[in-house]
Amino acid sequence: MYKVLLVDDERMILEGIQQIVDWSSAGTELTGTARNGIEAYELIVKERPDFVISDISMPGLNGLELVEKTLQSFPDIRFIMLTGYKDFEYARSAMQYGVKHYLLKPCNEAQIYEALAELVAEREEQLEKERFVASMKEGMNKVLPHVKEQFLRELVSNKTYGPSDLDYYQELFGLKTGEQPVRLILFQLEHSHEYEHLFALKNIAEDLLTNVLLGATLNGRLLILVQETLEPAILLQSIEEVKRTFIGFYSVELTIALSEAGPMEAGRRLYREALQCMNHRFYVGEGSLITKSDLPADERGSGDIELDEERMALLVKSGLREEVEHELDRLFCQLGERCLEIGVTRSYVLELYAMLIRLCSPEDRHRFTAQMAELVKLDTLPGLTLFVKEAALHVTAGYYKNSISRRSSIVERMISIVEQHYMNAELTLNAVAHEMLYMNPDYLGKVFKQVTGDNFSHYLSRLRIERAAEQIRRSGDVKVFELADSYGFGGNSKYFSQAFKKWMGMTPTEYRKSFEQHL
Image 1 (cartoon, one colour):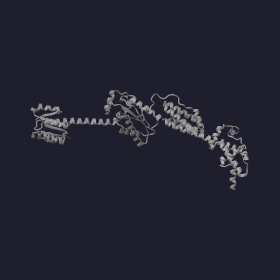
Image 2 (image 1 turned 120 degrees about the vertical axis):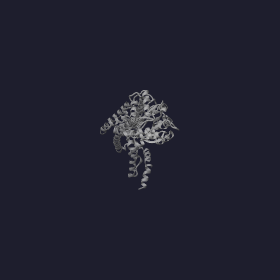
Image 3 (image 1 turned 90 degrees about the vertical axis):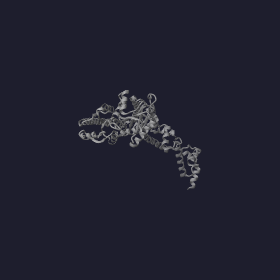
Image 4 (image 1 turned 180 degrees about the vertical axis):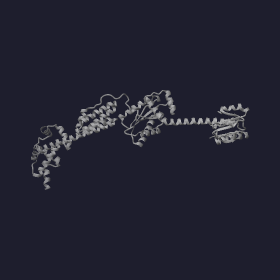
């Protein structure tokens, strides 16, 4: 029911209309009556009626003045004006306030009913329109986020928007960019993740970043369009804060690319810049914040990388772990500095890995070949570096183990020869190498030192002195020149005595006397 207020300064008319009109049939209820405009306005403020039936000629505040004052505060209230014949033309001025219904006194029940019915119909129609608009707005609010996302996808992909199109969408979305440039921020979640992570990241970014205009998921990444209102350094700090907050909640690594600033109509170019920065992730690794300043200043590097397969193979076969690691670091450092096309860089890495497959042991070859599929999936140079380095050091360790075994065998043969021929003054490293083992003496000397920790000449001299000392302990009074002759010193008593004192801390004579004192 719509509420009606009846106003007239003539009591009989007021009571008559109150009684003859079937208010409920008209879809209304009479909620109050007033005898003048002042009293009527007080009731209007108190009751807030939908319709007011008012005489136009009243003391204090006439009908037109009541209409004017009411509509200033309550513009939705509608009036039916009652007037005498002489005031009819005057009443028509009420139309300027939107009053459409005015009745000549005396008026009957049907006229008032009809006027009320029209007002009720107008109000119902208005409410129906409001409900329709509200429904449309509700529906629009539901689809608007999707429309915004689709608009951003089209803006950066394959659709060109002119200035008029952009103006339309900016008005539709309530975007106020003015002449300010914009930037695109591209977020990539690393490794396996759920769709809810992208949704959460979008909420965090929109909450922490200043002047976010639009956001959308595109090819499994999150794309955010922001208005350039901050200093670049402050924007970078805000992006880092988004990253820290997200990782704090989900422990999922983020790689982020930031475009340069530009007008919104240059969205496709800005997106290409962001993608170019994201592609540079191959060289800088996961978890980076990449801007145009991180890219190579000019064109991609050119020239051959110094991949010397023969040298690398020789280092691996020699079991030289440190040298292999150093050579790999040099190679991958070159790849990182040159920033060649990613496919070219990958070809160098695959070539190196193929060499390792050829070098590895038969039992490792099948596993190394199978792991080629894992190598191909790696999408950053740091990841490729770690993978290849682990493989290379594994193969090197195998060669080192075999080398140690071979070297130990050689040294055992050298020691056996020394044990048999140490009394021969002609026994030297050269003699062992050339006449007995037929090997390079320098190589033998290095191998002997690596395995025993002592060089060959020291080992031989110490063995001769130890055996001479044993002879002194067994025989007692033995001549020094005899010992020098018997234990490889060629009868040189002086040299033998010097060597004996060096190893035993005393001359042969002193050693014999000290031994006799202990007996």
